[in-house]
Length: 310
Image (cartoon, rainbow, N blue to C red):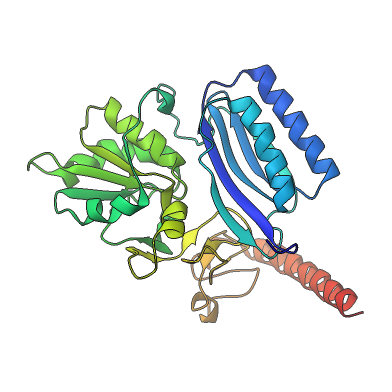
């Protein structure tokens, strides 16, 4: 691998994590960060670990070796991509109640999820007329890319998914013969809880895409892919294309929505201040604050470019 390329790995693992070991792992990771160029976001809870880290190849391996000492025989569910630049400013480690927040305490993926379907069998499953396909991600993620004909629950966050299931799933299933329920998300972690939830509610024939969209894009050629658009990721890259490279989207720094190149050409768009999604969301005072922030960012960018040229 070229020296200038950063390796990016997304991981998650559900297992019983003791509080004293959580704190020990956090300290060891922060020690690695102090001594090396390591950045990312990791969420640790009593139910496991979830997140993304970015570093050079040898540092990534050092972190993975450390994590494996803590998770034991449990799988890390690794997805790999690469970036020419750091995708996080620094390493953030958050200790929370859940590694992906659903808000249903009794849901424990380590005690039984739906059936995993790998990338190579996924197309056949979702093409089956007896299958309904559900995207478990948030509405803004779905808006920039999804599998053909999948159901969008149009949720703001994952906490809303259980209520969507209660209010809507039976409508989609209808009164026909039992259907296959196929679910997917970015890297697989939300589906671990989503399929566990459905099983607990008594639903049958529940499947989920192992490794999520990221693994699918890595495994399946563009010609055979049924995923349309780009895949939203929670870092500076915003979205990845089918080659798992930075896509065409950026972020509106006012409201946080992903915006396309076409969106940036709209009359409502003012860089750093507003986009067509949030034009009426903020006060004039807010917009003045955003404008000042953008001026400071522009000055910093100009300064860095000048230093680079010199």
